[in-house]
Length: 276
Image (cartoon, rainbow, N blue to C red; front, side, top):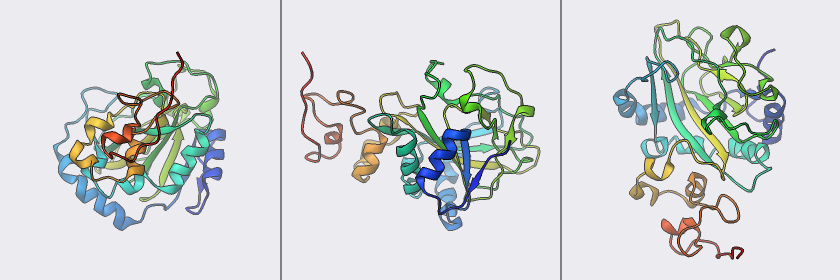
């Protein structure tokens, strides 16, 4: 089974439908190359300073650079891309709200072995979510071409419907090959892993993921984005980062205030009453 490719003018419903069916889909040629050039330039100092991973899972020759909102103003355009937010809204629409979960540039260096095949939702302490209950909508933007030789992400299409805690090998997967500027959209339930880089080039992707707002974020956006930077950001982006209620009574501050008040005094919605 291969990974389906969709054209850049596809709508959120089409992307979400492919996600529900196969667990992963590639949308081709979404981000302009000049936009990616700006992102690469803004992130270059941070990526150069990022240490390689401490274990086989994170990649001993892989650099994982986070805090993209703070470090790359241009990357914010990918975080809030209308097609992706629309897709997340459809795919995660069974919950009250969703939020930004993780922002990370992943640079797989030369001669790197493949990452173990896994589900991203295992980050939630390996909790066994009910089959079919999706908690994440993930993206991996190709900052460089993704080829089988240079470590394109390996996916087991359809495994979003499989049992939990299964073991797969690279032979069970297909590579998410795509050109620079394309984006792999995949669920938290699909089995996947970074591929082996058998070239002398570095494969770079921007991993921007979203999760249900009643779950804890993998990357703490409140600390990854300094307060002085957060104060300059649009309200919609702040709410996506977590300055919003996750559900009726989740995430308020002090006297039932809207959390956006911490950064935008006077812009919050009205308070609410809790039971008891």
